[in-house]
Image (spheres, rainbow, N blue to C red):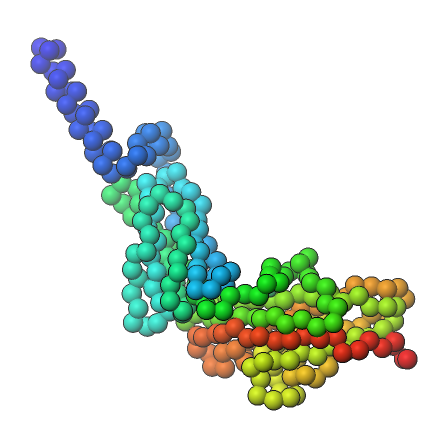
Length: 263
Ligand SMILES: [Ca+2]
């Protein structure tokens, strides 16, 4: 009796292993030992603008997933999602043609799909961010001594997601002095017009910078001080309508002169 039954059980076991191996690849041990929970549906992280015509996607490993499927579509009405990656990795370096894109991540466990995730917005641009990046935060502010040329990007997808730059600077000013700075917008139509840029200064509302027209950074303290400010996109100039769009714009920022307050 037992001699008849044992080969049958053994055969079942081999078949079960074969099914597991077929569905899970080399992750057999993980399949047997991991938790029984479902994979979490998560949006992949998209990194744009670091290098020309490249987008990098990454996501956290999920032990409940057998593998991942990454899909991409252009940000156009007619574009459909198409698979760009399938595998067990957690990072994918894409190099799509110039344009705006959405990426969705689906996790697969056995025969079941978990996803697709909400889309991540990304941009493939022939012009990458400038060499001074990262300077999007005050802690990364760059010392502005005389003049600098930099670029700034602002893109908005048709679902409203935004990919936006900010450039932080600091100037060192003598006690009770004012620095007069100018910004030259290389995509502006003339002097004095609204540029593609606003300036943010602590304690003041953001204000649109006029092309080559001085704006002030003031040190009202009785000691020498570092003053911080940020140049940010003037969104309505980057995308004049409510539609999607965006671009990269080059500018020059310069310290024209420094005067003593009341001097
Ligand atoms: Ca920046």
